[in-house]
Figure (tube, one colour):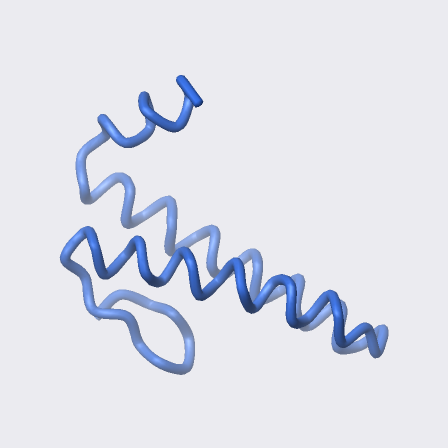
Length: 71
């Protein structure tokens, strides 16, 4: 938990950048699971992406519906 609190002390811009990269990585993971026909894996990563997008909105960004990129 201390690591999370330390991370939240970073500037909003740094947090947004990290979260955007995390979403991109999770989307690649979804593609992998889709290729393996693993619906549970796709859904699990989708839930993670949704949570991260919520955090991006909390940081004042707008999240694109298709890619998760902050506009």
